[in-house]
Length: 229
Image (cartoon, rainbow, N blue to C red; front, side, top):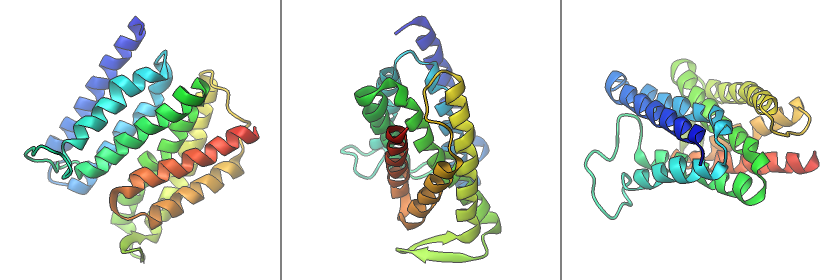
């Protein structure tokens, strides 16, 4: 670890603390908005990932410690911690959120190729921005609803997830290409197709399990794209 990594870690820690404080204090009266605020704002760390000298730093000093802490806030914790369900969302969903991020970092940039950090970022996009805006848009304008496996969704929410995921995926693709990562040639059809699959995956996932399924499926598809070149 070099001194730039230490500075980056300090900035990330401060950023996360500020986000949670805002969610718990400022948005306390609006739990749904608070929860999605945390998902979206914490997810912005995908733009901080390239500034670390080694992907393992992300795992050992950010995502894994957060995953462990969040596990002890779930109902499956061996110890009981008061207020395990915060205003910013159910702890189990947050545990999945941090856990899948840890898994993706371990598998792609650490086990396969450091260059594949871009896959982690693009796999997080539908979870962070797509799902986040789907809930906000669906909650406000989602008059047409549908049920899949007992989980109620809205047409407007799903359309918002698809659109936001596609647009932000292009943006993240361009950002990672510009900072030195070697990505395949940008193909809008690939992004639209994967965004559609992510949207369907979110629609059929019950409860907080979409925090696992959406990034997992998306990362596999982008890995296939990376192999195809």
